[in-house]
Image 1 (tube, rainbow, N blue to C red):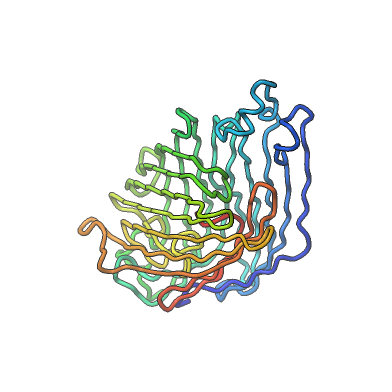
Image 2: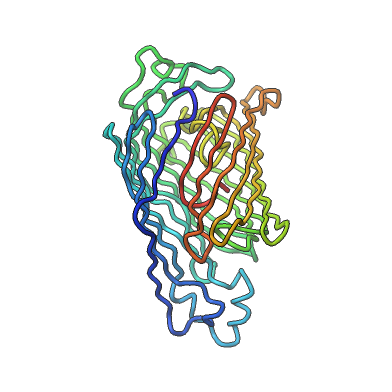
Length: 377
């Protein structure tokens, strides 16, 4: 496909919620729901998959022990985001396509012990097809390839100071390329991992979080700094290091309007397989382009989003972004920017401001329609 594939998604059926509230919880006037569950059947279409059918099951919850607050601590817990238990969310998403492709994955974020511990990541298995457009500024006609791979991304953090978390990270991915264009670039030695790869990396991370809401902030900052090392010591077939800074800030302009800004930098040292290179283009990074439409050792991105509450649970957004790539010879090529913009709608599905997100992005000769749960940043 020459541009980002369009997706037509239908939300069918119902959204239900199941609520459980412990008797010794904080006052009902201030307490959010302890548990909510939303099943969302989904149908979508892309040129690579044809029609696909699946379901997204989203569970938002808090641990019972986090509600057992002593009487003198209740007011502080209600008004202090450090003490008030933040909502955890686990999603189970599965889809099967007419081309016999399978997607099964579980993204999650869990806060425990009054936010003292924070765990997030993803576990999944994919039998899918993608398009490869080359790396760096050397672009090639889209090469479609098929791949099977399990993916695990784990992050375990502990709060070390108010609003600051430190912890460990791990990622694993076994990329089994099952079909390529016999005359394409992936079959040559030019592209590392073109016929498959195994990556396994471990590292450390630092988080700074002052958001007033996890799912739809109106003020505050979320900064995620990470280092991951890959090599024989961690069981990886490729040796490289990855440094990432992902910072988002949120600014309340008035009661209905929020400005969100995201700064992203990814730097790679060593030899990473093509599927693990820094990239631009996806439902989160530079909407409007096919996933990983642009790849290289390094990438930097600035994107903004204006979020407007329209009516009750309905909001609208406009967004734009600009990014650049780089490598070991030229850290970032500011003379070759990639830009995209668009607009979208949000529908809030629970009292914790978790949204269904529908965005339409437009890039240079490229468009994309995205429907998912949760914000891009």
